[in-house]
Image (cartoon, rainbow, N blue to C red; front, side, top):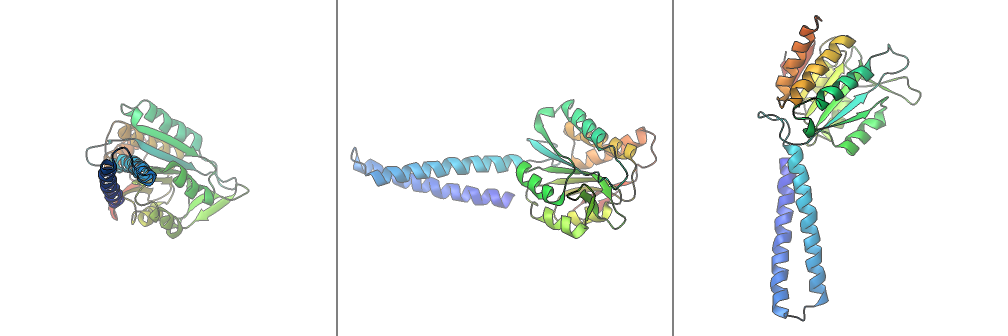
Length: 261
């Protein structure tokens, strides 16, 4: 993303120089400024305004959960799939807990939570394009080979293999900074995505509903308080222990391919 910001700033500098040169030409004509020069000035001013806004947007999005905590608006995209031919999950409760913890957070004004339920394959890319999230949270089923289970047109299971989903996140690597895979056996998928995304959290085995919800509670409590992703991960694991659930070693934290457990 920093490279894209630098590119925009370079374009902005060029247009500002063009505007300065045009203003010099305009001054030479006095009151009889040709119409084409006035139009060129308007065009340059429009380009400068557009690029300035674009730089500001990208700068805000680049200031994302670094070592000093949250520094700007963070968009969280909650994706959920609960196919009719699989065991039912308490996805609604998990979403409610996340909403509540962010709403009660000290830094609540810095978060925007977006949700997509009963997600099908095409819905994932559309949501990433529409929401432009920095954090993507998937809640649902995972398979023993690391695939995540989304839904097909009739609501039944549609598994997506790790390499396919990783290829998708590669296209959004400058935008998405953290992915949480709150699904069974999602470690393989997490490692694949971590080739492109700064922080990824997955599960190294099956995880129960209660443990998954407890992890989400601790994770978003910490983010809402301005903690880093790694600190939020640790608090999520602690929250599982506080609930008396023996699954606190199931979530794994991956940073650029380095597994933390």
